[in-house]
Length: 394
Ligand SMILES: [Zn+2]
Image 1 (cartoon, rainbow, N blue to C red):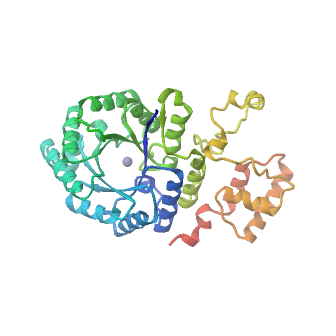
Image 2 (cartoon, rainbow, N blue to C red):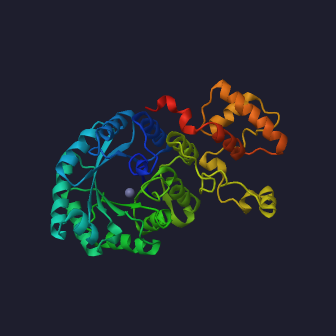
Image 3 (cartoon, protein in one colour):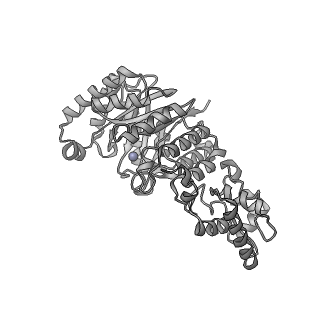
């Protein structure tokens, strides 16, 4: 039987740290419900000590979902951990995720602590969290720039104190796939792992390697991946959930790994996020961009017509794209246009649909074939996705 990798989604915490991606409480709940439909194993709902709003939204999400783990993030400080527990405790399966930096540069300049003090703080924080729940995750912040033997010491302390999940973040997006693979292997060999100990990874995309590093870590034995929808997150973002999952699915021959993700919900999830934060999915984005399944060159088009597999390694339907269901053209009625714009994430009133109807007719006079991206470009010129959801914005 294949092994399973847990998908830990941090769109609502790390993702929200992406510039311009702030979500209000209703939007977070809508996104959390979509993540549950998508089949993620754990939602990181926020950083409860950060603000009253963060606390309230973590608590609201905990109550809104029905069959999923909900994690809250907290520093390795007693009052943070208490506040975190308060926020997640009513969720179907609460998790406390506490973190502490372990790299020389972070320990010296950020924390002002010695390595011995960091080990002591790890012990104190994890044992305090473990008094509330057995579902404790410990992250060694900036792990990829930490000394490997020191990481072993810190993680073994965390396991002993009651941490079940050990997260190895590449906080600054610095590591390389082969190096990260070797680090995970090293930890798997050196740690005093229990039967239920899980190694997790959390990769950032500063060098464009977040997904590659996550897959390399899975290959080495990591069984939880932290990622975000469309890869949004701090700076250059996190590992994109849809890319990690489709990497594993498309190359099952290589990984032999399952996830609980309903892949047909990948595209709708990216769309939902895009609609909520008011930022379009880049057209060239892997898996979910509008061009991801578009074939431009004549040679490619010819091949695809004869046999799709000549140039397609996965089908649009497998990720929930049904863009060809409604073909928009000169003869399309306003109902078809309304449905098409809804599929693209816009909610328009009758007058707005009328304006789009006229725009499409005008376009159809100039252009033989109208693609989704034409409709989207025309729509985004007139209406912003965010503005159409203004009713739920405060
Ligand atoms: Zn992060």
